[in-house]
Picture 1 (cartoon, helix red, strand yellow):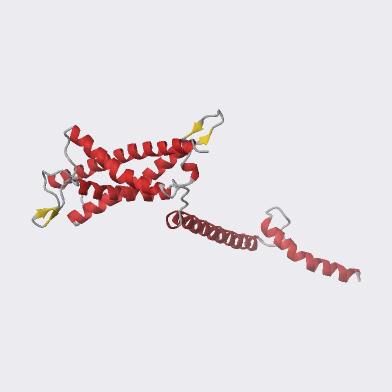
Picture 2: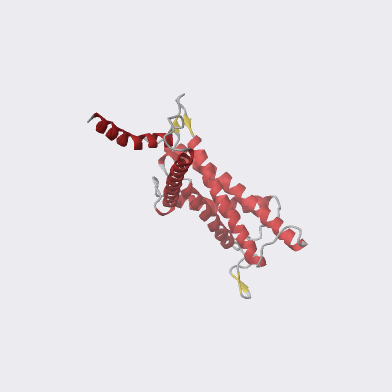
Length: 251
């Protein structure tokens, strides 16, 4: 009986010793080195596959969360997007046209009367001839801003009113940073739209130095892009800070 019990004990403990030897490098070597290496390699492959699967799931969840900002946004102020459109489409482009006119600067290429066939929507010497192109160009800028604001979650409550700081004053850091993030996203969309416009105009990708005509067109597009970003940034940052200050006075 003692011999049978001893054999049974060895039979039961041997698999456990092998498993421990596969994971703990300094246990007694019941298995040989080749089996230990193969077992560890198999375990590492399983762990790597699990990590890859977890990373893929996290990336999918992050993409879904980001995509939901556009299809199911949180609008704590449902009328603010409409007000933002008015500021980005009308106020900022009009301010740009006024500033360029006062300083006798060259007018943008998009600021030309709309022509239908042999006639135009407005006569060039009539008031309002530049209204339609300004609104059309402003609509594209407003679209870039709205998409950027949705991406930056700029319509949530913490981006619409300042937070109380430790010293008792109001902190506008969140409001300002959300506005900057939205502007950066909108600027990226505007750059992409400019590239597509040049592609449709020349029917190919163009580079500086190919010809004087291309250099002039690229320089014009660059200057207009900088002007659009500057006037939109000044106008929208001022507008958002004003809205946050007004919201801070609400109970």
